[in-house]
Image (cartoon, rainbow, N blue to C red; front, side, top):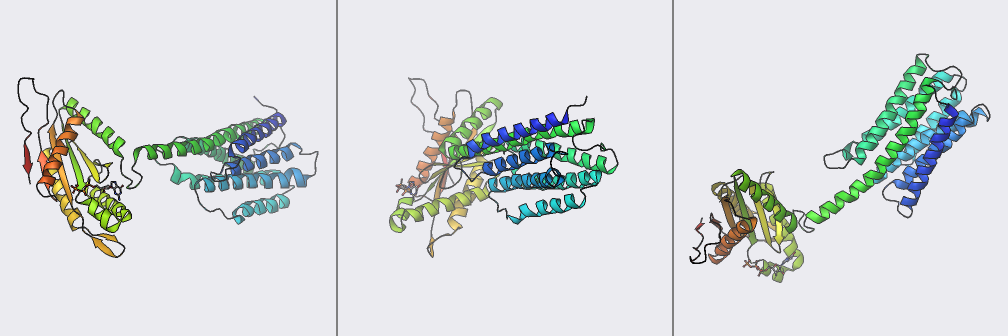
Length: 402
Ligand SMILES: Nc1nc2c(ncn2[C@@H]2O[C@H](COP(=O)(O)OP(=O)(O)OP(=O)(O)O)[C@@H](O)[C@H]2O)c(=O)[nH]1
């Protein structure tokens, strides 16, 4: 099946212009996320194809040299878009190098069709390869699928260009030129049409993915300390408690509270207090395992959630955390602020009817006892305050001081 190449070029022009206009509307007034550069790239692409379609009817200087220069500039504009999206500088001369190279080569090879096709295709493939390399840091777990779509579109386009280079070099390129409607040309332009759509949608989805990621981070992390906020720490506790109950496993929770924090605020100011909060979070986060979770419960109180951990293991870690905070030095405006914490710990198995609220309550009551016993200490609890039958008095939960 051979499609009519001039019609395909028209399809590429119309779709590139339509996509560029749509992106220009989205990007209006916003220059940060690279969408305006992407739209510029699509317009240059469309303009290049307009000149290609005039092959034989307009001077070769326009339909060969300028058309290819516009394609090289279009890929440079896409590179600028990706760099702007990633907040990286993109010197303007990076734009000029491929354009100048293509202008020289096209002019020199104006009468050598296969060699010209091979050189131009290889140059575009290299530009796309550089674009893919620039995108690599974005392709991390949890980054969203926009970058995958963009990578797929660019990757396919690069393969098509390399294939076209090889075929031109090995004499497979149709001798009658660009507008000849043969299989190679039809496939090349069909893939160009599809990959422009795919890559552009991928780029737009990347901006949406980034917004989603930012919103997710805002909703789950504490703005001051950067650890899980109360909502996501409680969510994790709820999930671990439900799993421990279902599987018959253990769960451990620490409630860590900075001692006499009000005094730090009162004598050094709230900014010093904020510095101390971040310092304590750093000490806690440095010592816990990757599967453990540190979260800010509120004010100067933190939760440390230890999945699949019994009371003994939790007590060893709690004592290490307490000592680490005591031995650490929090610097504030040339002064060393002394900081200690009290820690209430619950650890144990959960039975049917036990809830995460009971776990939190048990650790909180142990913390209260640590404060009562003089602060800078760890207090443990291994029993939950379960609801008892009406006629019986609720027994005191057992706690141990270490
Ligand atoms: N700097 C700062 N202070 C906060 C923040 N959140 C809560 N606080 C302050 O933390 C202090 C908590 O004081 P208290 O509840 O009396 O606790 P404490 O002084 O640590 O006393 P103990 O816990 O009994 O040792 C209050 O002064 C709050 O204003 C915060 O984000 N930044």
